Length: 328
Ligand code: FAD
Image (tube, rainbow, N blue to C red; front, side, top):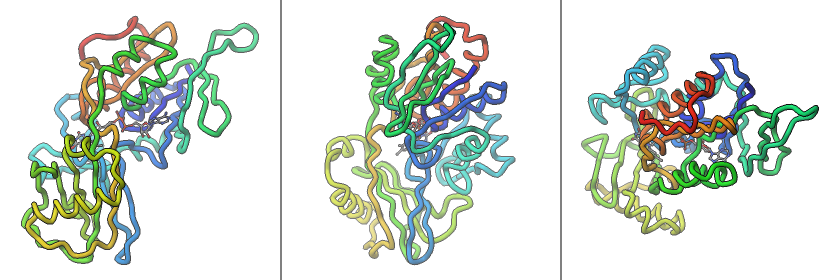
């Protein structure tokens, strides 16, 4: 089967990797500039060199045996490391959060800068079975594909799915995400904050010394995330306003006077933390249309990976189960 996967986050990549291992030609499309989605790492130039920021997921846990086995394999390859500051069972990508995603993407045909606008099905020449074609923004249509996997946040999935499966689209609409305004900032000197982590100090939900995570290098860098309610209330404000507000809030909760940052940016994750539809994945056998992503199982890296691998298993199973709404 020629399979298209829309979304190169950890769910789409895990699904694509499993299908590739079983010799299915897979093409992954992502609108972003790199793989990883919400596990991505942002790099900014500063006068003291490049600063890297894990500006989405900060760490992840591994409890399911299959994911734990994957994480242990990544650890052997030096792609993840434990990060005790965030908890006894916390892992982070090494030397940056996007390392596992980059590793998975390296063995796959990943097309970046490719936003899928619509999906269509048409009969192939000489009366063959109907196949999928994907319209990429400002590019030619891609296809044919025998199956399509939609591995993107629920709100974006609902738009693509609406024309094809009412139940899937309704479930996606019924599983909204919460936003997160995030500020990343680098400094010339180490900030005199006693701890590498500040949590639950409204409006700041999380502030971490990114440069203290395993494998990171100077300059001193921080990731500061606002809580969902604050992010919601300030969703449409200008990034410059958010930047000033969150740096001021950070200064207050850290109890220090902040020096001028070498570089600082505000980033709005409109769909940061997903809801949970309570199912592992969705598969429409008649259309050969699959759906995976964190929003099916829960707002965590582990859930996204599990959703992707379980969808791949269902596809490899002979794309067996009808519309797979079984509990994980
Ligand atoms: P994504 O990573 O969102 O991947 C979807 C991909 O689809 C993206 O790369 C996007 O560019 C692409 N895409 C979307 N629409 C299209 C389209 N039309 N065409 C082509 N490509 C498209 N999890 C934890 O476990 N621990 C944490 O501490 C944690 N903290 C977080 C903090 C923040 C600020 C955020 C944003 C997330 C956090 N998470 C955390 C959640 C975790 O990052 C996600 O659950 C997980 O990464 C989701 O993976 P995914 O593959 O389902 O989706």
